[in-house]
Amino acid sequence: MIAGIDLAGIESRPTGLCILNTEVYLHTVYTDTEILTILNQNNIALAALDAPLSFRGEHFRDGDRELRAHFPILPLTFRGMQSLTQRGIRLKNSLSCKVIEVYPHAAKKILGIVRMEDVTSYGIDVIPSNLHELDAAVAALTGEFYLQGRYTAYGTQDMIIVPRF
Image (cartoon, rainbow, N blue to C red; front, side):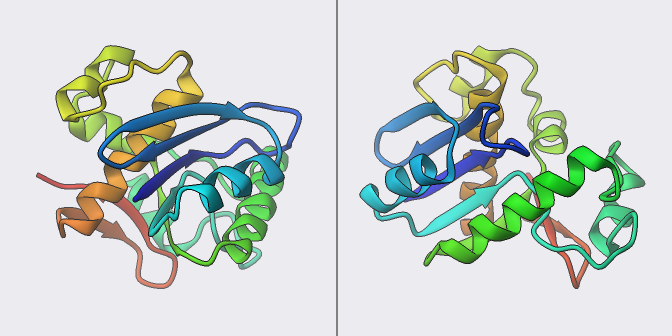
């Protein structure tokens, strides 16, 4: 089972969560406790997390620099990105499953997903109700591409995964 998570930087803002199995479940949650409860209830094998999962004190990591050649990406030193990165690292450390860092903005461009209903072309039979759920669904799809070996990894030390046809 795959979880796609469009993580918000702080718990008072919405986080999109997609559980991808034989059925698709989309959720909008807020707290780490809510996220962990849903993941633990669903026996997740892979979590595809839309958040930086490392920080080395620089504006950009190696994966960020490679990705920036093709897609816009914010520096990790922006205040909002700092809180997102800290939360992403905390969440990653709380999970017992494999965790990959994904970038749904790039994945949507690669997969041609423009509208909410475009995810149905990839087997997501539930139309997201907001952009956070859409990005969570795209994160889960990226996880599926990853498990199939159909992905591009940007960076070697800090890999960011996007789908590849």
